[in-house]
Length: 470
Image (cartoon, rainbow, N blue to C red; front, side):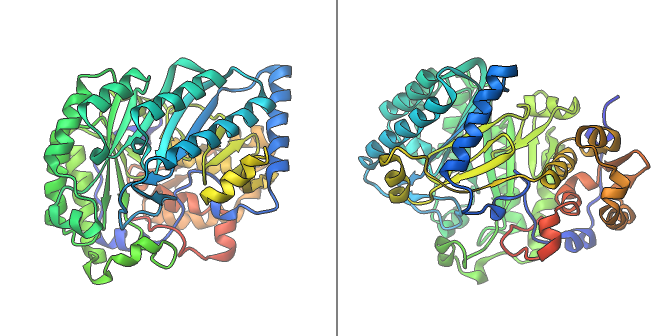
């Protein structure tokens, strides 16, 4: 029997509820979240995690790998961006970076062995399409030579429309990419100028039309609401244009204005930002609009067409979540390659150096460029299981958690279950003696539900470093 929350049900999101639940909180692409990583976890600990995986593969097999490659370069600065990036028009800088990536791949092969099976590859940034066609071919040849990428693997890349062309899309398809995501953000010219990212609707439409003729399994679009000079009316026009493009998946992110942390955002005038009431209207309009155009709400601001693999996985209760967001791939170890990349191996998380120089220096010494990470405790593992069940299936079966982690849910999580009753009164969850069920309404606020089980967050209550839920 399918989880009832997976059905597409009409919901009513009131202004009062949106305001009450509009609080900063993690996106839970991992638990514990990356802000909990410590510098005590370094290259030695990461190498040990890799060796434990290799030993496990010999004994009883290991799950396929997922690979993320971070390409930090961009030709122009987008003022809203909080990603790790290097702004440059000097494309020759990519040469030394590819050499460093090769060294990093070689270090992994030395520990894991060559030909490890891979079920998912994703190139993010920055702008991966900063690389030339030849450089992208070299990178994919490197990965295919070191790993065994499955024929049915998801191979995705983030595309900046300003650095793409019809010919380039055909080249990406020839290299084996089967999923591409266009960074749209907003089509309003005034908003585009305010964030220093001008890309006309016609440009994106031409590229997406070309992508439809190529063997991409999924053509996606990323949007942001809450940007400077956006209004509910202007964003509604963007939503209509996006619906015309008919992407297979839509990621709708809330802009997090944290100029104290991200220097580029200081170029955005606070007075130009839409007030909370306007942001709420944008979100309401986007949800209603995309549902009216036949999209399925996946969760965490993601939408997909009903026949997309992500929507199918949601209906069947097979959603998973990793550092790239929702995925159809089952839990697997993730190798994070490149500057600032985050990985997961066994019960550990790791992150590479955040500067090109530090990243290069480590690899020049034939050392993993890991500068921080975390070895998960037993408590972390059980809480991760609960949080990911909420985020992906919208339901926590007490028996399955108890059998897998040898805990008693009602005793171990008595304070959390008590706090959940407040969310039950709001209609976000249903509590029984056997399970926690996220309602159709609660699915839109699933971050708030998951936050109840975040021991680190509940302990310090410092949430300003996170984006807001709405």
